[in-house]
Length: 343
Ligand code: NAD
Ligand code: UDP
Ligand code: UDP
Image (cartoon, rainbow, N blue to C red):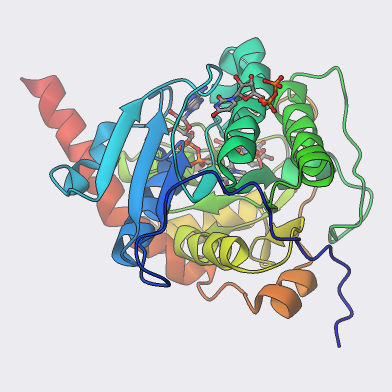
């Protein structure tokens, strides 16, 4: 008996992809778009660990080869420099579609490119999925809820989004990507999965990514003041990256379309987050207030009952446990950067 509302995916009949090699024994071949980025590179680690073949497609806008260098030379791993806005021909079993800048600083840098990535990029990956009968997972976002009037947010909430604001290239782009996924599902029988990801942090985030956790951690290590935007009373719920990766794989492997909220319900104000960063890295760190950005959501917290019930998934790592796990990675990269400057 299930109380959570969801579509159970119909198996697709358009199996023109790879020829099976031995029943049940075939390794899956999986594409990860955006696989050189923060979340994508951790997902690639997990998929290779599970014995799959992995092809990464990335244009390196915010991703880095460094995030994947430990797989170079592995015959089960391929890296293709490619922009998902352009079509591509491949034969695979599953597509994890992550390609899209995720930090507000990056997605606002070239908003037209961001919306093209979300719309044309997602269309191309769905067209690919349709042609080869692959299962397609979209990494959507909690931003589809906009500045939410419902708290915490359930998947049934339709959101409160400004269609003409500075964040629209991202949040409306992802909303359109969800629409496209559902239309290919209903209209072309593509097996789709939709994840709505809430703020996620961990090792390999870009140092100057602009997102709040990476900013605070890098600032505390560099002994700079932590920059709190606005009054710091706005909230977010922070998820450690390994929890997200487990959720994405459970969603892809399961039979439910979604959308599913994947996030950690532990909710913090930005001032509380600054305190945790101080406790973790440097208790003498100071705080500097800066003006907030336009249309900043006031609060955000996932209701994850649906993922708990249907995917048997929930996050395991609290903010206080997860933050220390990204500190040494940040310290090493900041040290290398400083040494680079000194040369
Ligand atoms: P990221 O910026 O580290 O990674 C995005 C990757 O996509 C990068 O490697 C980038 O080079 C690549 N990319 C961007 N545009 C591309 C294009 N046109 N063609 C090919 N590659 C392209 O971001 P992330 O945090 O790893 O986010 C991954 C996905 O998860 C994104 O789709 C994002 O919207 C979603 N998401 C992330 C979070 C989060 O908190 N990290 C929250 C919600 C949703
Ligand atoms: N596409 C792709 N790789 C494929 C199949 C399709 O990149 O293997 C792209 C294709 O170029 C098109 C998009 O996906 O822009 C949508 O494809 P679909 O077949 O659904 O639509 P159509 O081409 O009929 O408009
Ligand atoms: N923020 C902050 N200081 C920073 C960066 C961001 O106080 O240095 C705030 C930002 O205004 C927002 C929250 O932190 O309220 C989360 O911002 P982020 O860019 O990490 O992600 P978002 O959830 O807005 O996509």
